[in-house]
Length: 368
Length: 151
Ligand code: SF4
Ligand code: SF4
Image (cartoon, rainbow over all chains, first blue to last red; front, side, top):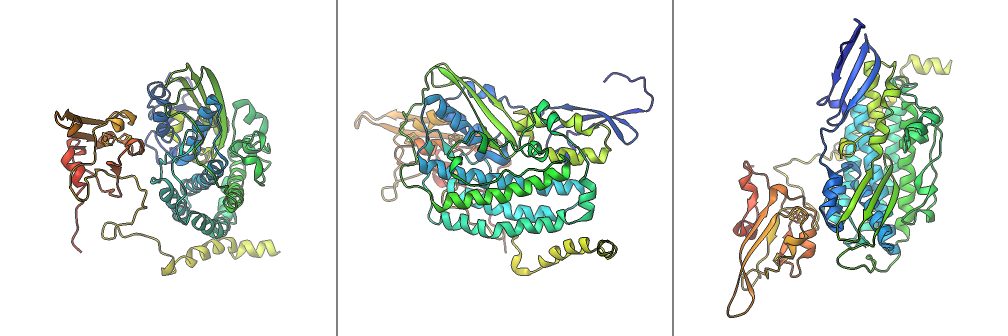
């Protein structure tokens, strides 16, 4: 850090062990009293070189690693990767596999938003919701565990379809979750959205308008809270999303409170999608006819999906061998984090905590 | 006026508190008393590995084909075998599995043609040392021995 001519300026390191930076993110805050003059994110503490690892693994072998980027949305990551390799090989998963993929990815969206809600509220000082959200998240994780045998880093999908058939009682368990969950969302609304302290604390904090969002490439709930109804599930449907009826929730002012409302509405919409999907899961095979050793033809493919945090993209270059020649990930958290400086300028230090929470970052994905 | 009364009587805060009180019902408690109460994990749970023996003959099912070692992204399985001069087959001698690097992805299990290697429902595999996580053939056949606590 260069010495500043301004004697009032205070440079403060927030993180990497700060509990409300949601992982190992270090933010260098330049402060004038309590006001933030500028922020600088120092990232890379969790860098594992995932993109380089991909070049040394076969396509099948790399699949478990993508779970470890956004570990709160491992299923979405797996879906994005599998779709990208399938596009490279010009194959599509059979309808049954697609429906199951949609169900699990939407459940994962709910789980990810639930954890976001709990920790975000915790950062701001509301401790109770965390226990409630984790309780509901547990139900989703149990479905994952029953389906594929793991709760967090699921490795649920395989290139070309699925590895595991549905277990006995899958539909009942998912339906039971869908039946009780919307009431729980209402409960969170009652706890937080109806609470005056919560509303006043978040209103007008970290405003990001639509034009700024586009300039930074911000996607996901943050963009939708600014009034842009951009959702890849609608804009460029994948995995059969065009068959399902759902709305893209938006708000207008683009502040932290609106992002909270958008995410709550998204959970309700996800339940809607899951209900439709689980009601008619097609019968048939769960794996496309693909070669045992995956060797895509020479070429490149980019596939992006709507992950819980925004647009998650996989770009793969193939040289015709069993290993990717190059693999690049476009993680939503990393891109959304770049807007932090814009949002935090002029805010109070306490608001920085709220702003980091509202971006919904996962450092495993930022650093990769 | 209504708004004022609402604010004055702190109704919005009391509503939230009411939700909290509703959850004091003992039937709604979901906490598990681990370790005295061990959770039942799902049938497909991917936990500690096991090398299965034939239930009757008690001989290993593994045919030393090395497919699991090839499938593993972390390269942590080492299969040692010798060619049996009589049967012309490979006999398993050693089997090393480095749990400390395993990510329980299940690819080795999927690759095994004879269901010899299996990820089981045991999840208590912590160890005080790194060496303790490198399992040899004997440990793999016996499975983990988690601590039993007195009631
Ligand atoms: S579970 Fe995955 S990482 Fe572990 S040994 Fe098997 S293939 Fe390797
Ligand atoms: S794949 Fe199965 S049979 Fe082959 S070496 Fe591994 S454990 Fe043995």
